[in-house]
Length: 262
Image (tube, rainbow, N blue to C red):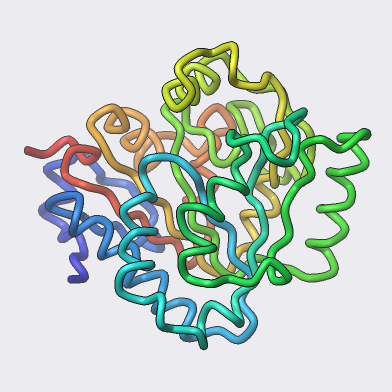
């Protein structure tokens, strides 16, 4: 069920100066969060021909992927026309490494709904020349973009993809060094920070800023403080996700915990 956040709700959360172009939607629980996100994603896909999509990894979008696979896997008309572009990827991993984001997305979502491999463009983590690999994806996006639907997650330091604090709003595809905060967050999936690479490839904020539709997914009380800064703090590269405040067609879906509500 679509649940737009009413003005009095915004007042309770302290969101007084948020750009009106951001559509903030709240979810009562995890199931509603997943279904809201899945329904919006399907709505956007249905309205587009040959859509180019980027998707996040991690715990937050898992419910959405499960809802899509459970209720919409039969929609061959959608999955066979969708084009997927990787949002980011660790550097230096073999192609069969279970830590690869693209492999994770294939297991958790793309294979489950039947998005053909031929419709997917991913970073090569083990590229001999990482800068050349970044240029390859940059050129591909210039020739095949812009992104139609950018589904995004929010890091606790405000990062989007691997655009860490300080990333320029006009940044493009590049290699990056990961902050210790991001590596510690990702270590939760692998049990040891030593297993989290120190460098990565990522789409830039400039690439994501040209997306026709952006959907930011935020869940959990540990995201309350950073979501508050994204929605009502200064628009600054110190909080990369604030670039969304100056973009059109942005929807934020957050659960009550992320919004600081009981």
